[in-house]
Amino acid sequence: MFTALLRLYRCVRPFVPARIRARMITQFAHFRARAMGKFATAVLTVGYNGTLLVPSQDMSVGWNLADSGAWDEDRIEFLKSRVRPESEVLIVGAHVGALLVPLAKVAARVVGIEPNPETFHLLEMNVKLNGLTNVELCNFAAGDRSGEVDFLVAEANSGASRLRFSHVSDLTGWDASSWAPTTPSKLRVPMRSLDDAFSGRTFDLVIMDIEGAEFAALSGMAGVLRRAETLQVEILPLYLKTIAMTGTVEAVKRLGSGFGSAIFMFPEGKSVELPNVQFDQLAMEIDRIGGGDVIFLRRPSNAGAA
View 1 (tube, rainbow, N blue to C red):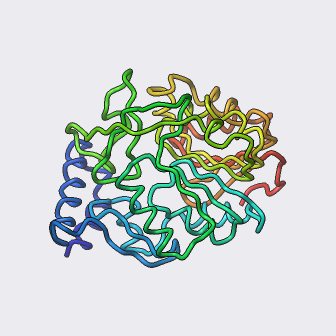
View 2: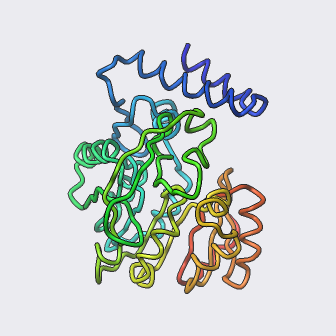
């Protein structure tokens, strides 16, 4: 019954006011957690992404893994094609490991960074559940300095949890898919510059998905990026405007500095590669769609459109 109701909700979601959507999805999350029992903090899923424990209230990555057995297959398959047996991968914002686990199975070594202590605990267990011995995990936020920082915890979409920024509302960027219009939980978490944490280390592939904190992290990882062959980052114009206080064109050019081309992955699974001289066009496409995953390549792949 729960599954049927959720699928019905997803059909009518575009026609429901945002405030009502937020309350509905949060109620779904609470109902799911209560149905499993108050001591059931996680659900075990087995599928394409591996054997993963996910938060019991998570209605995004967690629900998709439990319902369909897969999350983000197109992006993972493309990233796996960029990984060689000797590759080292850095994932900034590893969450529960839905991306980390598949990549660790084809790379020499993977480093995962996850600041949320509860999510990090699940990530540690998921690495063990999948028998991975080539993974290094770090429980801190990536930033422009070392110290501590405020962190906001999203209830119904744990992957949307993010750093707190004093110049924007705590609810910025959290719509019906992630958080009801109430006060979120706040934590203090450690923060480190990645150039300090990984001084002199080379990662062939760097992946960033840290919900608007990308530019804070960029200020502390110039060396890491300079040595990377590939950078994959989620670009969301709303976060660029409100948190980074920059435009999409400027952001794409800064992120892509030194890279030869970029591949934009459309939500429906298609992709297009553009040379660095066309990054303005890439930014316009990101604005048109409202955001998406971009993969910057040091050397163009000549893959064209897929």
